[in-house]
Image (cartoon, rainbow, N blue to C red; front, top):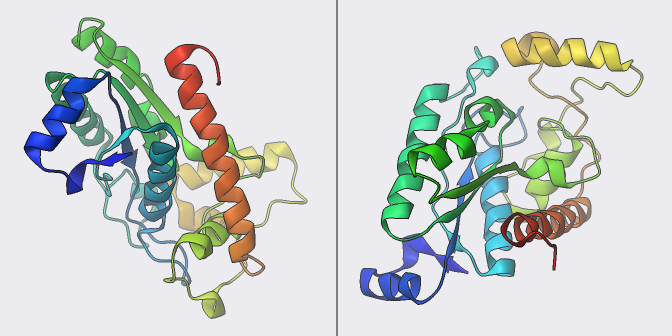
Length: 240
């Protein structure tokens, strides 16, 4: 792995010129995650995931884009950018990487609200670059068996595994959908996309109270293993 932000220009240019490099751009958000998790949670988790995948595969790791599309969390805290802004920034970054002869890029997403702006970005960039760029937008939670949540068991466990900035004494049960039908969950999901507080009341989707560091480590290892295999498949057509 090469963490770009810690490198020096001559060394980095020499490294890039030696082989066909692959870059990872992690994308997170700054938004409320209940009373027990920091507003940087999405960015913190996706940064760690991207770092581990980069280490596993020897990719270039770019600094995380910490701001995402989180307007649905209002009036709870969210520092958001527009969908068009995120698309533009990612487009500019990818084209900048291409100008430095880096033609294969993974965009690793850590926030649900970013799904729409990164959708079909690969197609757009292929066209703009005249087929020179290969871009793969992937959301890390698609690479684990568990149902994802927001400040619930999964995210809280992941944060316990990577950060000391978790206040478990303040953890509260949020919206739990275990006994709901698929239709009811889908309806709540649509409402959450418009207003997360209306859907969940306290800004938490799930129950974080039994989250543990051990669970977080296991979930993280699963995500990294599966995501690394997917990256390999995207580049070569096979997983090993």
